[in-house]
Length: 353
Image 1 (tube, rainbow, N blue to C red):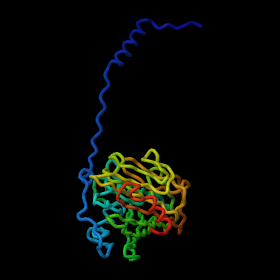
Image 2: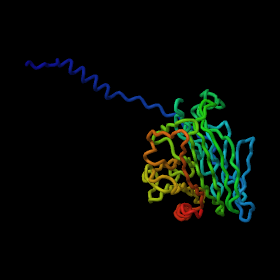
Image 3: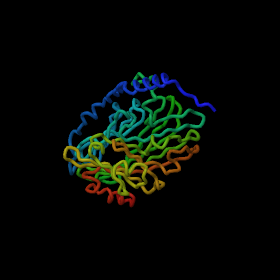
Image 4: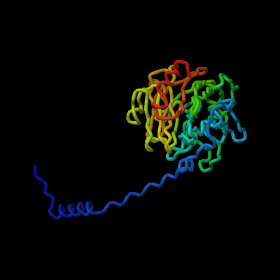
């Protein structure tokens, strides 16, 4: 076999091309467009007024029907609000106030505007219908350029359930909602009951029971392993780990690295803002199927998953069947220790909170 030789002139030409390419400066990368944050992020609102001891009744609900907003007042100051306008992709709790009156959650936080304070949603498909992402309802407007255009996928508030005064420091309320597509096709029914407990000194506790029912046919749950939590919480950036806060779970894990996709009974998110240490913890009640993992993010998102067999894997809720989830929400003073998160979780599952 004869060996092929390249002419010296060809080799020299190739080397010159390679050398010129190596010396040619690379074009600078186009800088990413700055993310414009809403006013609530740039200038976090402060609650008007503060809680006071001796106020009767301790818990009051004020429904502004024109604004589609229920203000939940605990010990004389708004603790949180339930928003149910048809201009929203789904109802949510917002704002949630800390004991000292700082906003703890954010209703819109680019680059993830679908993270909206405190909500409950998923991606599902009713048998015979198209897939619908209620989690991403904000992206389903019929006219993408019109912020008032109707939603294709939307969870709508249907009615309130009767209030029940359970004790001087406890009140229960509730609501019924419908997950619907194309403005008229119902997919799931949802019932949500909330027991509110006044803990004093601006602190409070919520015991929330969610129930979804496949009233209209088999419903296939098709959410991936990332884009859902039951419920989902988006903390205000001022409470995030990125701003000096801390995530702690029941197993001793700290921050996203040690808590995301980890099994736990509760997760707490706390920070010191303007000199006041405060936090919000989510408790998974022992009635829930366990073990299950949690989603956590240092930038402020967290929430409990379903059990592994029903998390990030397709499954079907047969017609007439229900799924339930029970969680506690503790808004406390101090960090996870001073806020007595361990003790209050134990009291919750023992029926003493």
